[in-house]
Image (cartoon, rainbow, N blue to C red; front, side):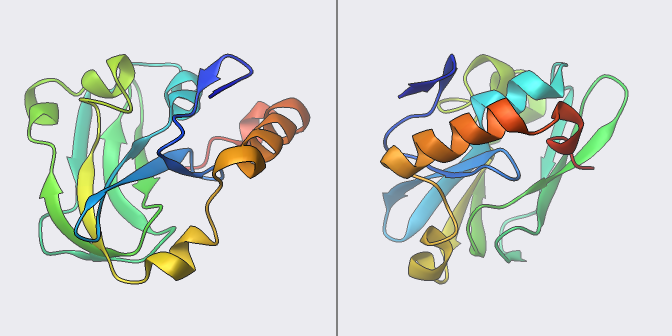
Length: 148
């Protein structure tokens, strides 16, 4: 679905506060990445992406890694709690994939969810996503969207 010109795929759940997404890939696993809106407001290309290593336990909304933009390093937050079971090795050589294809080749990590039902309640999806995203983009100052 397009919301104010930004792509929000129907098969993804979104953490609008942190501009992250997750998508079920089977067997309790979820790919996660930066939303197209998050890519746009970063204002720069991603020069480095360093997710937490395989085996790391993560809690929803907590740091899952760091990305480097042209003049800053920013933490990225996981939209789903669980264990890192894979990372996108393609980002080592081509972190710009996050910019070019955020919902495809630009995914960052794969996480085996520890409590998807709890986490899902905190994420936006479908019609609720459209309402929340549009309100957020229209009403909040841009400076409030970017959190170190």
